[in-house]
Amino acid sequence: MAPVKVTKICCIGAGYVGGPTCAVIALKCPHITVTIVDLNKARIDAWNSPDFSLPIYEPGLVDVVRQARGRNLFFSTDVDKGIEEADLIFVSVNTPTKKSGVGAGFAADLNYVELATRRIATVARSSKIVVEKSTVPCRTAESMRTILEANSKPNCRFDILSNPEFLAEGTAISDLLSPDRVLIGSLQSPEGIDACESLKEVYANWVPQERILTVGLWSSELSKLAANAMLAQRISSVNALSAICEATGANIDEVANAIGYDSRIGPKFLRASVGFGGSCFQKDILNLVYLSESLHLPEVAAYWRQVVEMNEYQKRRFSKRVVDTLFNTITGKRIAVLGFAFKADTGDTRESAAITLIKDFQSEKAFVNVYDPQVESEQIWMDLQEASPLMPLETIKKQVSICSSALEACKNAEAVVIATEWKEFKDIDWEAVYAGMNKPAFVFDGRLLVDAERLRKIGFRVTTIGRPSAVA
Ligand SMILES: NC(=O)c1ccc[n+]([C@@H]2O[C@H](COP(=O)([O-])OP(=O)(O)OC[C@H]3O[C@@H](n4cnc5c(N)ncnc54)[C@H](O)[C@@H]3O)[C@@H](O)[C@H]2O)c1
Ligand SMILES: O=c1ccn([C@@H]2O[C@H](COP(=O)(O)OP(=O)(O)O[C@H]3O[C@H](CO)[C@@H](O)[C@H](O)[C@H]3O)[C@@H](O)[C@H]2O)c(=O)[nH]1
Figure 1 (cartoon, rainbow, N blue to C red):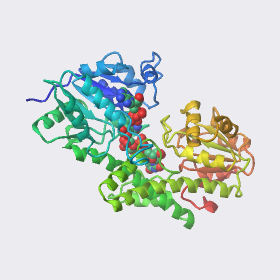
Figure 2 (tube, helix red, strand yellow):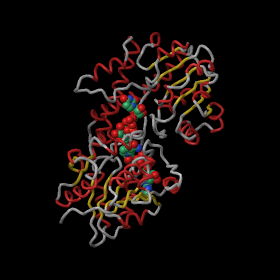
Figure 3 (tube, rainbow, N blue to C red):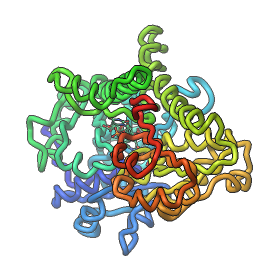
């Protein structure tokens, strides 16, 4: 048998990963028809919208979709048709942390992966290469293979590959166009290696051969969890050091710069912050913790769990610092929170540190003005409601207001809290912000974003992560 030449791809799941990833495949492989399917009709309608009001904000994404949509890139709710026609299927559905049952709060909820796999098994009438794109615990491909093989029809074989995605939101398109690496895991059988070759050929249309790594299935699955755990561990490490800086007078920026010069450590991902957010880091580490516990490795589980605990500590520490600095009470005071997304250049709010901060300010009975350039108001209300399920939305709305500009959010506030590193917050008219605020006017920079010295000259009292309050 020779590797199958892929001409039709289907991607199940039109989310933050499925959408951009397969749009880039379509762009770079005009000879391949790519159909992205999803059960969520509103999402598919947005992908198909005539004015390109896409369901996610990602720099450069509209250009890619504009070039490929209708040519060889299609979005549809007809999942079965997509499956039937494809020779290679990406499973790119969500794998959130389980909310109930065995492993609740830690294990990945694989229900969506299983449902998509069962749909493939039911619908497929010809052989398929099934590619696990979602982030899953080690050995999930084995369960997918069992489901597919138990349901396969005559002359219909399924080969499973693992091809985890490493894109980061906000830079998804550039990450996809020039990835550090593409990882493909397969069974080391002749059929597994052929399937791997087929997918490798797709990526080889734009990714240099030496950046396409091929490994065993389980290594591939574990490498994804490991990469996220290592990245998050760097942030928790630098955040832990930021607490020492605040207590000693050292400056976390200087410390991070100094250690990053060591080529064994490297300068990236050492930015102290109010805490990491996003849909992946916490979920994937908790998944790794659960996996370690299931494998009877409690010390390993405790090691990784601490990365998440340090992140929670960092968020709590920051809110407390706001309260302490504002003369130990923020009751009845107005706090402007600039940024609601979990990082800049995305409209995604999953696990955003801003949600925790606002909840803390609410419980201290402060009034909160929020502004984010990309996040829809509806999303903010949904997140705040989810964070305080026992509080009626009307009560939340009495304490929190959503503003349409940073300047508006800061008006009559006692303090500005920078929760997301949007570039526009660096460049706002800080003199005008100062003029509109109650005095003394405080700025809390949770992202090491603004020029503290400049703001101090205007009259602000500035507190920065990783610097003691007096000299911040
Ligand atoms: N968001 C990221 O930056 C990122 C990066 C790398 C990996 N990942 C991983 O990729 C996976 C997807 O993440 P995401 O952020 O794109 O999730 P998402 O929630 O944005 O998208 C998942 C989509 O799958 C659809 N879906 C679920 N079950 C389906 C089914 N049976 N049939 C058809 N559609 C179905 C949902 O409606 C949803 O639109 C997760 O495992 C995640 O951990 C995410
Ligand atoms: O030095 C840093 C770098 C990041 N962050 C924060 O960490 C979080 C995650 O940032 P980032 O990793 O850039 O974005 P994600 O989209 O969550 O991407 C991560 O998670 C994805 C999902 O698995 C992986 O594919 C990516 O490789 C991995 O970087 C954000 O809140 C950032 O603000 C910091 O606080 N300091």
